[in-house]
Length: 469
Ligand code: 5AD
Ligand code: SF4
Image: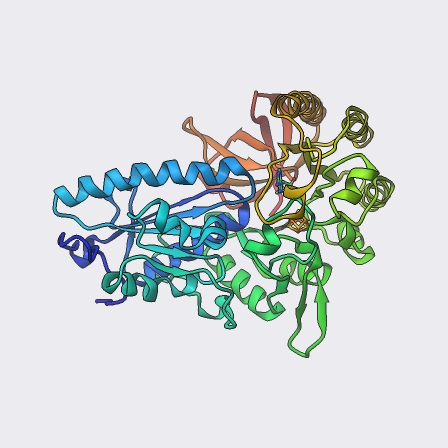
């Protein structure tokens, strides 16, 4: 029996669940890094004897892993917490205690403010401290309302278990691995340098050991994650600094790993070596998510992006020369303070010039504490909405054109799960598209050559030509 996790809330004398019944429910918002963190928190809970709750109503421990990148993201959390307070009350009436944890970047940014706004919360834990979850939950039992939102000196990763207890959240075929956290770029609109802290890279050995363990558990594809992943500079065992390209090569060499991806990159860190890896490493997917944010040099400067439009186009040209079949994706912000109609048109022109396979567009949202939040010339909501809609129409048309162009092509699909219909399997193309095909379940975990034979609204139809590995 493990004594680390507490199930009952100290303020409520509801009885705890029996050990074997303990359930955890983790809901994650926001980026892929949060998905990874949620998996690691699930590992911690598994080590403490928790099983996964399929519905939040059944959970003795509820974790909301939050995102602070845009306004709506954090507002959503408070409305979610209101519902969870009611759920907690309802469970208490049935004699069950519930521990409510707020993790992630809202926890980091707002700390104790969360407890003031929602007293039903038991623990607030930032992204650098969640390895302490068992101890924090224990503390909350004695003194509810525990906050851990500092940047501890110890390495979180050194304290994280990879669950051996039948993986309560099975990683499946494709998994994330955080290799780098934090950011030193300080783009003027962005909270990440404040919520995730200074840029730090995990040592090569630690990353490769984790990938090794994932591969032994059946994982075939890894996405190396970092807020600014191509700034990666982890130490090798002999004390050398290794860049992302070196790490990709090492990850691709792990037995069982057939595909490697990485996200998210900054144009300023797109090194020659990394571009060469796109040419040389067969397992590296020909897909690059490279946020540019704007097509206006004046705005890029105001955003403190440290690159111009021409630099971006130059990188795109070099990456395409290294790997002609590469597909590109990006992030855009519309309505940044002071953005004129002409500057917005410049963003549309950049999108037309590059032709993306996919892209994400966001309305600028003022984040407290960031320089842009104080800038003059905040754009009104209607203009932002209009610009967003125009940009999204363009992005959608490029996405559809990209998908149409894949019909008749053959490429490698890594099958991940059974399809909705019997005798069908679903996987992903190198370009992240969902592809379904007729085939046996034994194809799951296999990278197969597939010919694309049709288009559905959100996926591609394929025909398996031959299993490639
Ligand atoms: N407002 C709108 N979008 C933002 N992003 C980051 N901060 C903001 C903000 N304050 C977007 C950027 C980034 C993506 C993850 O979120 O485009 O690349
Ligand atoms: Fe935020 Fe990315 Fe800029 Fe870092 S590089 S400050 S994470 S937008």
